[in-house]
Amino acid sequence: MPTFDFDLFVIGGGSGGVRAARMAAQTGARVGLAEAADLGGTCVNVGCIPKKLYSYAAGYAESFEEAAGYGWKLPAEPQFDWSHLKSQRAKEISRLNGIYASLLKNSGVTLITGWAQLVDGHTVEIDGKRHTARHLLVATGGTPFVPEIPGREHIVTSDAMFDLDPFPKRLLVVGGGYIACEFASIFNGLGSKVTQLHRRAHLLTGFDDDVRQFLANEMGKAGVDVRLNCEASSIARGPDGLVVTLARGQQIEADTVLFATGRVPNTQGLGLEAAGVKLDESGAIAVDAHYRTSVPSIYAVGDVSTRVQLTPVALAEAMVVVDALFGKGKRRMDYEFIPTAVFTHPNIGTCGYTELDARAKFGEVTVFSSEFKSLRHTLSGRSERTFMKLVVDKKSDRVVGLHMVGADAGEVVQGFAVAMRAGATKAIFDSTIGIHPTGAEEFVTMREPMPG
Ligand SMILES: Cc1cc2nc3c(=O)[nH]c(=O)nc-3n(C[C@H](O)[C@H](O)[C@H](O)COP(=O)(O)OP(=O)(O)OC[C@H]3O[C@@H](n4cnc5c(N)ncnc54)[C@H](O)[C@@H]3O)c2cc1C
Image (cartoon, rainbow, N blue to C red; front, side, top):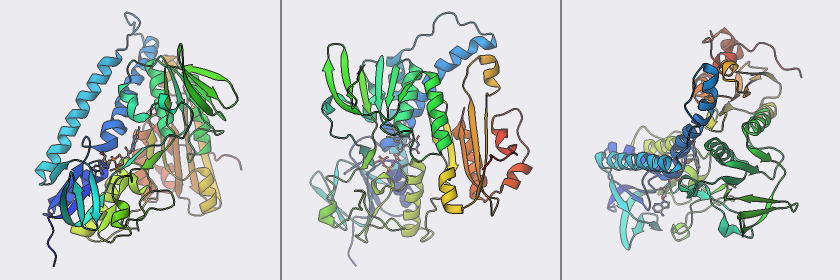
């Protein structure tokens, strides 16, 4: 039997990597982990966490405006201090980096700082030193993709948005995915004049069509200049800022141009080819249902293997690998009914199938939807509206799609996701007593199906 330095060596200390390393070490396995940058990966450093903190910051602008309707007299025009927000965020993120380091240390994981490369199916090299392991796990995540475009050197990606200096008075966001929409919404709330360009007819490909339209309308009402069927063809520096020329010739000036035009898996410089690890047609590491790559001793989870790019998914995939190698045994991850939120203003929360996908999968479906002004906005004077939609499989009566655009939609949908995974039918929704007065109660009181 060959002897190895480690039972498991993990490349990448982000969501998936840290979870796998920590949980494997807790079973008594000898585990090493290499991280080239800050612990916590995309989510902690330039993703979910700082994004949500900035979304909270943006939300205060709305609250200050709304307060007057509730009798609050604010002393003066509220002032926003971007530098203070940035330093508060940086402090919180380094606290989290520290927590990740102690979690790894306390579970006995050997942390090696540096860029790791695969040498073969059992060996990694970091700064010229080789380490061997019975199993290797690649959890190197993804990185923003920017298309080739004249003036590309002037643009920034989501990674740079949290530390912009100075604060962009005018922000142009290119892209229509959830990251583009979130940054457009957040910077609009923080006080930038935001224009969002998207080359398709609707934002948020993959989301329910009603949600896509409703959100674009609400973002527009909130002040984002959403321009659909619109493409940037070049960027240049002009006397008063960046000048973005659109495909149809029109020009827009901005202080910052964000390209949020997709993400690609981090597969470069990893030694994948040397080790014999194959990529799939999308450029991600190809894995089987147990996250095993084309090399049996090498596994890959999270964004580098591109199934569903979300932190809780990377964590769950990591647990499948740890259970198979060191724990309860082999099992498969179920990707159906994964709830997710988009932290635009208002938020989106969604679980299960869009109406279109449900019709394709289940045949006949019944659709219930509701649109209303929330109680909060009767006195706040805000014109924001809430949208909710249920998609029900006609045959089984099972609720197979649940979608919301409105305040705290992510918080609302998380609980419903449990019911949906348990197979809740529309009859069960109907027999559930609502919590009054909330927006969420609407999901258990929708009785009239949409025609057709
Ligand atoms: C702006 C933004 C907002 C997001 N918001 C959300 C959200 O609200 N909710 C949600 O669920 N998901 C969100 N995501 C997605 C989420 O961040 C990712 O799905 C998740 O971080 C993937 O985890 P991972 O372990 O695959 O990779 P990552 O967390 O990216 O970690 C990969 C790590 O590997 C390291 N690494 C790479 N190559 C090497 C190497 N050769 N040697 C050593 N280390 C290496 C990197 O430095 C990095 O730390 C967001 C992403 C972005 C960009």
